[in-house]
Length: 140
Image 1 (tube, rainbow, N blue to C red):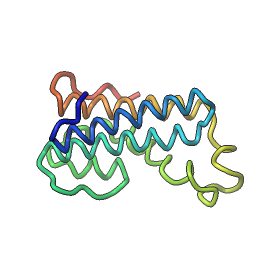
Image 2: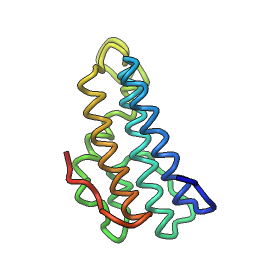
Image 3: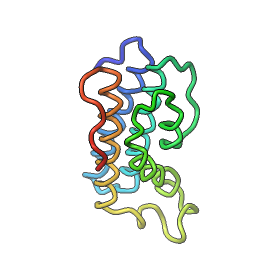
Image 4: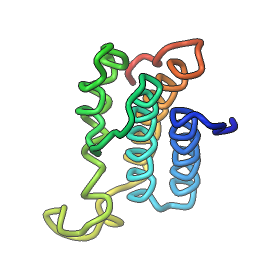
């Protein structure tokens, strides 16, 4: 997809790239990083919807909160997915976000697969809204 001149399309294109990078990281065994990029993909996808609806600036990193701030109620069925993905924002990057150990110790392949599945649901939902077609996938 070409980002074109639309901020919404640019944010969506970046979300899709983050999702792809997350998949590559998971395949290479970098599971904590795959979880973080999953969060990033979903966050950017929801921000793309805000821009598609005319927002000029969109602040925040909480995916659940970003969905709740969509006045149209779009993506609301993905709130449980967003809440799960929000758990990957800090502890996947910082050892002080964990009880002990490092993110690399704390996150494994199953978590990376789940994070990527959740992120794909959000990205697909945003893509459907911005580009037309199907809406969000059912919550995994």
